Length: 235
Image (cartoon, rainbow, N blue to C red):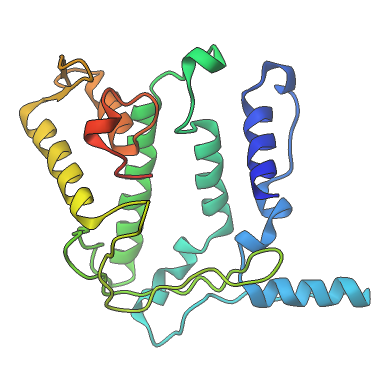
């Protein structure tokens, strides 16, 4: 069902045949992905008993945790809907030869929108007397845990992350060692001012188009000039 919802939204957004079709926001179609399970369960109960009700939605953590000062940002339904919709507008799997259309400056847009999210989050943290977000290190632990308290439509809760956990290999998906290597390759490319294409060609990023290439590489969309070598750091 989730794949169907994703496919129909992507098709409507990009097909010229549906350019005037307006779909409902995703938080109305899949509300269980945007709010905590307590709200969903209360809504189910109200629907089954045909009872009019008003359900307050609380943040997922405890007020004793300083990070909860910025929960309003990370758990904002509008912001999360925007993020999902952006990835539908600029899908990483987009293939020009198959779709017969090129998405202009997709990598630049990827870099810009994620940069805006991170700097806005840092600004919100500073205004709430919190330090900016620490840089992520693959070989270091993540000190802050997170429990989303969201659930799948047909039962089962989203996985949570406890405090002070280290990155671990995921069989068939990614290894920590590989992520370290891929990040090192991208950092080297930035330092030297060019990426290496599949055919060994030098692709300069010291011009106005460079940020577009950098975004494609970091996201690892189909527009990446060498996805086998630079990997999939974001996805």
